[in-house]
Structures are given as structure tokens and as C-alpha cells.
Length: 184
Image 1 (cartoon, rainbow, N blue to C red):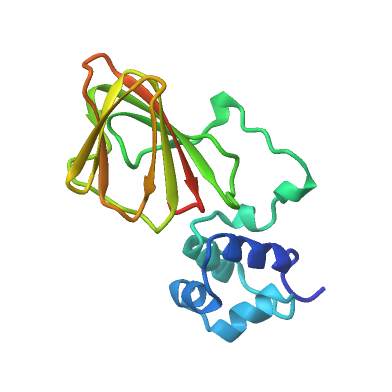
Image 2 (image 1 turned 60 degrees about the vertical axis):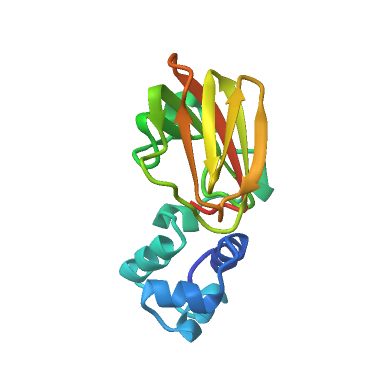
């Protein structure tokens, strides 16, 4: 059999991330034409090339072959939620959505007293980001503006705006982020 099984899936994942053939091909170190052939099932890429493509999309190679959400619901058990090392000082961050993400991703953040998303403001992509405070008190800094939020409060903003979240109540906090389209 020639070509990548699931070339259509690769194309769908690329488009869900709003990435062009050119940007993914450049990031993967392959030609745009070759990537197009892979997506159309006309080329049989090596494992190394699949790793480069997956990396360019922020995925694992296995994600290129997994079930699509159109085939039914996907459950992510709490004890299997990926723990992320990035993005939280003095706390933990867990992905809540089973990967790979198509149109949204959700994260749970647990902050110790004084914990934050880091010392500096950061931005990622140009997505719509929704923050909901489950417990505690936090300060969300969006560029030059600061918002104090407590349990039950929420805010929507662009992930392109430099931002930082800090626990300010002194007793820890739990928050949930929902980002669409995925930009991490």
C-alpha cells in the first residue's frame, strides 16, 4: 500500500491548527509539495519525516493515526491527564482535553500561594482564551491592565495579548482555561 494511512487526518489536523502547507513543511524541513503528496496518500514518508511533521504540528506521531473525534466521544481519565511542566511556577497544569485537539483545548491550573504562570508576560497564537476561576483569588495581567478574579469569575481575552496569571489570595487557587483554536 502506498501513502500514509490517514493522510486525510493529517490534513484535518493541520487545518484545525490554521496552519498552511508551507508553514508546516518549512517547520518540518520538507518541501510543500512532498507534504501535499503525503496528505493525499501519494507518498510514503519515513518515521523520521512523520516525527518532523508531528513536531511541527505540536503532536506525537501516534496522534497522526488515532481516532478522530467524529468517530465518537473521547474520554480522558483524571489520573491519565497529561501533567505539563510548562506554564506554572508554584503549581501544576493539566491538559483536560483528550489529544489531539481539533478546535479547542482546555487546561486545569492549580496554583500554590503566590504561584503564577511565570515571571514574565507571555502570549501564544491569536486564539480566543477563556479563564474561569474554580477556587481562590487570582490576578490576570493583560498587557498594562490587571483584573482580580475570585471563585466563579471568568474573563475572555485574546491569547495574542501578553498575559500572566498569579495567585493573590494566599491560600492557593484552581482555574480552568479553554482556548480556541488550540495555540499551545
